[in-house]
Amino acid sequence: MLSSVLKNLSILKKFLFINSLVFVIISFGTIFYLKTVQPNLIKKKTANHIQIINNTIEHIKRLDVEFNKEDIRKFLLSTRFLFQNLDRVIFFDNEFNLIGDTDTLDLDPRSFTQKSDIIEEELLDDQNKSVTKAKKKTKENKKIYLKEVLKKYSTSKNFGHPFTYTEETYNQFLLTTIKNVNIEGVNLGFLAISENANEIRAAINERKSFVVRTAIVVVIAILIFSLVLNKYFLKPIKNLVNYTNIIRDKSKEKSNIEILKKRNDEIGVLSKSLDDMTEDLYKRINVAENFSRDLVHEIRNPLASLKSASEIIIETEDKKKREKLVKILSHDVERIERLITDYSQMLKDEVALSTEKMNKIDLKSIVRSVVDDFNNIYIEKRGIKVDLNIDESISQYNILGIENRIEQILANLLDNAISFSKDNQKVIVEIQKDSYGNVLLKVIDQGEGFKETKLNKIFERFYSNRPDKFGEHSGLGLNIVKNLVELHGGIIVASNNPDNIGARVEISFPKV
Image (cartoon, rainbow, N blue to C red):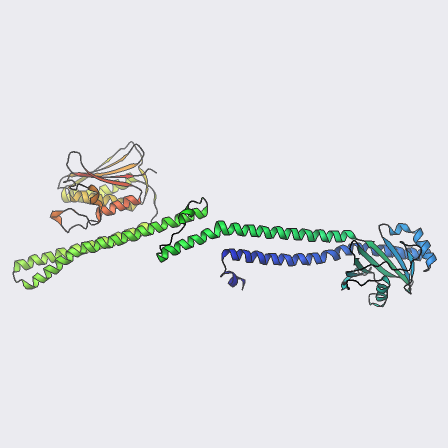
């Protein structure tokens, strides 16, 4: 039930609700504790009173004191040591007449009671030490007389056991214990011991004051913490939620994500991460849109050619023209198929790249493996050899990357270089380090070189400058290479050789 209530509340409301619930539980526990403290303190005092009463009865029995005013007066004067630390000791006969009082030896019959708010009664059995407690509330102005208490005590079922009650006034907390004086089975009268126990009230008040102060401090602490929690944590989180809602709804509303990004705590890190992720997502969306637009544009030309050729082939009866048109149809179909295949592969590569993890790898071993594979194919097929030049004084060329993607980069560059090379020419692959420690990978061919005035154009998607081999290449190879290099934090640059024979592509990977 509690979980169902909490799940629909905000974090701040949950915090306040839980703290309030705990505070209420602790409050009830504190009230219960304060209710039990006073009886326990009274119990300790009462035990002392009972011991004094029992000792007094023993002395009366031993001295054979008669229960009359004169004997009791002499007894009180001769046994003052029994009543040290007590405020008052009073004797009554069986008729509830005052026959002895330590406070007034003139036997003033007046009772010593005052205005009382609460009376606490405690009964102790001297033998089995069983305790029962009762509380009675009196009217504000009603006076309680000891004689009335004695009369009720004499007719109660607890007659014969010690009986304790308290009287609380403005400046006093009186604790009184009474018991009948029974000697050899004969009830002679009653003995009452009264003591000013202000220390009990002081202890109770001190505890109440401590509880109140603690409660105030706890409430203030909870309020301060709630304000801090709301200002520095909950509001920023709410702003982040609003930011995501703005992104989701494509709203033009201005967000304060830039303010949150300036924070130096976890909220700032989360804000930066969320903003970077959103930017990256927008970039991916734009790339996908541009890619789809370019693909549609590239496919439109062969489709138009297919449509024209199919319309003409129906009308012509010339065998040679029909054969030529069939070749055009076949060429356009192959071109469309190549575009779609390369595009699908590119999308698969992008998905794979998002899940692959970069590791520290040695570029030298990867390049040597790819070069060996190409030599095994093209030396025999076209007489083209790929030479590998490595500065052997450097033991390792470590970079942070994905091994199979580095292989893909070099393979695409070699494919491109070999496609522009003539038979029996060479392609050179070099690995070096610059003065900054960056790893350089170069692919140099002896082909025709780049004819473009702006060489960055060769890395554009679907760009291919092969008039004699039109439609045989999708124009995605170098674009894929550029994307993979940038993924590894590298830079790719294309240029013609200084002697105007062939071209070169140079990649710079950052040092690890």
